[in-house]
Amino acid sequence: MSTIRASGPAIEAVAATKTYKGSDRPAIDAVDLAIGEGEFFSILGPSGCGKTTLLRSIAGFETLTSGSILLHGSNVTTTPPNKRDVNLVFQQYALFAHLSVAENIAFGLKRRKLPKAEIVSRVAEIVDLVELAGKEHQKPRELSGGQQQRVALARALVNRPRALLLDEPLAALDLKLRQTMQSELKRIQREVGITFVFVTHDQNEAMALSDRAAVMNLGRVEQLASPTELYERPQTAFVANFLGNSALLDATVSEGETGLLALPDGTRVPAGPAASAGRALQLVLRAERLVLTAPGTESRHGFGVPAVVTEFEFLGSVCHWRLLLSDGTKLGATAPSAAIVEGDRFLPGDRVNVSWDPATTAVLATSPTIEGAS
Image (cartoon, rainbow, N blue to C red; front, side):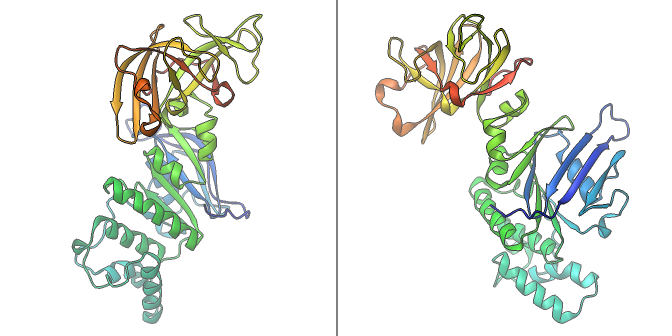
């Protein structure tokens, strides 16, 4: 993970709002965020949440309806893209097919009319950084998708911007190559030490790469925090469901029953963190943290919520169950295949008890229940 320098925000959005003509709602709506110098920062969310609009507003390719963008303390809201000290890497790479790798990388430097010797030196330096040595004279069509992406990164980094903006740069790659390039992006960001702002809809990608991430929904930032905090302490139902495989279970702190929660079916379970009596809550139940036991078998957590298995999937390294509680709540449970003995491979129609560790279960204040992502 990169070291975040303490010299103040590299990028700030202040009440940033963008409404497209003819739209009935803003694409981004009063967004406030501050991105640290040298930070690997992700903007995460589903399609249409506003993440690319926010990135393009930072780059200067979108003009805000209201609010402002600051780069290193300077207000650049009306500054054109070519005058902002940032570079944007697009999902499609936009390489020049008729130019070689070296010529693609040098394109911006030549437009700035830098001395030839400096161009040659910078290109050689950046080619080594992205590990494309020996490919300098090849054309983009002769490269793999991952190599083309490295060229796009090199072309942006060779200009030595103070921040690099990346708009879903790994989306076009297959899974294995995407995972490889995630490691490469982290390595490159550590070596160059500049701010990376990375837009993605892939939660695993954001969790693996980011120092912090902003989760967006309907044009607003739902939560901004480290990956660990987003996962362990989600603040909204949307964040809880978007990150990981989880379900929300309604509960109420029981009146006169210290330390107990009442579930909709009447089951009492340990409350975990203290809460005021009578308060309505939602428990965030992560699939990998649910434990299934046969009825009549003692649970390690000291309680069990009755459920019926509706589906079972063997996925190689893990097994996944879909479960139905008596009140109609749907849950998903996941366990490593190697840890499952034959008697615990519950199949559709089997009755089971479900339990979890109350001390590590996130709790949300009451909000409309969202069906579990099981």
